[in-house]
Amino acid sequence: MPRLITCASDRAIGLNACIDALSARQFDPRDEDSLAHGALCLRELGNDRRFLGDLIARELADRDSPPREQGYGPQSIVLSSPQSGFFLRANIWPAEQDHAVQASGRGAFQYDVPHDHNFSFLTLGYFGPGYRSDYWEYEYEDVVGHIGEHVALEPKGRQQLTPGRIMLYRAHRDIHSQIPPLAMSVSLNVMHADGSHGWFDQYAFDPAAGVITDRLGTGSSEAFIRIAVSLESDAALDLAENFGRSHPSDRMRYACWDARAGIVKDDEARDAVWREAEVAGSRLIAAEARRKRAELAG
Ligand SMILES: [Fe+2]
Image (cartoon, rainbow, N blue to C red):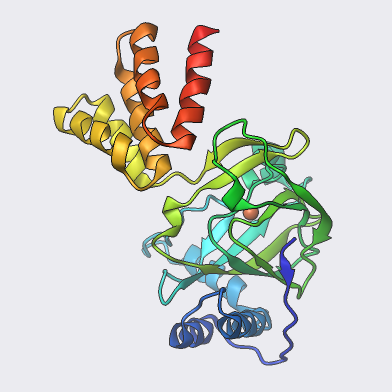
């Protein structure tokens, strides 16, 4: 389960002071000193009981201001842009009985979706009783990443992000399945921001079956190559052929093969694409190609 971080301070700092302090020192959760400093900044921001309400009220009142950068869905408020290895975020966790969950369902708020993260982050219970999570751990290095792959998941029990509690979620290690809090809750995060994160996999799991059910958080490059190939640009097709065999990211390579398989005329031609992919030199793509060919055959 995520590491519980002990960090005491009664001082309260506002959002700008927190951003400045983190920027001055950089944030790298792999470094214990940096981690301790990040946790202290988060603790002291959490001690400011007014900043978030003030910020939301200000933004609601100012209809001319550009929308705050998002990217994590309707429950996240990005509090600072990525810089010096971090960005700050507030996450809102509605309760089961709240209208948003009743209207949109639990899945819209990432509840009941066991997943890991391709970045580490610190989280603090800021408001409300806090969401609960069931936890598992796994060995990222042992995983190829194909859908249906069996993964050894080690159960780590259930915890609650109670007010004031600080946890470090470790990239590619901690898996959690969130359960709505008993009342609306808010967590504050120091997110580790690194340009390379997007190229690493993040998975959804079925812990009962012990398998990977999905690859999450695909990058924009994958979406763009799929669109360009669908538009049947010759340049995009050449690039997809090239990237499919040689791109450093297996996920990007897979996107190229999948895009190519998506535009051929019939199942026979599709099977030929996946047959070629099967021997393209990637364990992930070989496994996915076998699965695709089995689907076509069945
Ligand atoms: Fe998560």
